[in-house]
Amino acid sequence: MRINLQNHEGNDEDIPLSPLIDAVFLLLIFFLVATMMKKVNRDIDIELPESVSAERLAPTDENRVIGIDADGLVYYEGEPASIQSLHIRIRDLGISDPDMQIRLDVDRETPTHRVIEVLDLCRFNHLGNVGIRTYDEFYNR
Image 1 (cartoon, helix red, strand yellow):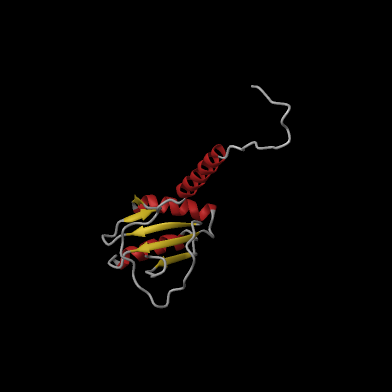
Image 2 (tube, one colour):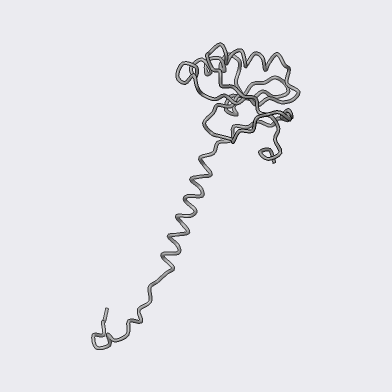
């Protein structure tokens, strides 16, 4: 590389911006992908019951989701589960973290005895922070 030592009056050197722009775009893509992978879909395809007196709470990922569809099938964190496997998971959760919030997603056509069975299972295992999710226009768009 040849340097001209005689012409130092004007610094007309250009800084290449294309590598910097490429690096910024790669970081942007990395952070977008990383934040999208954090959220796990724990919802099941159900029609939520409506309530006019429900307390509005901000959605959080710090809870456990138990879902029951219209046929009475039970789901834990979005995955199908039997009552026996749900009992084991709830028992372990009641031992390790009795203050854990449980969100119960129930279809409006779910048999009442199945909802009571899951609520009794939570209460039996000392989990008292249980809420039933209802339809809300703001959150369920």
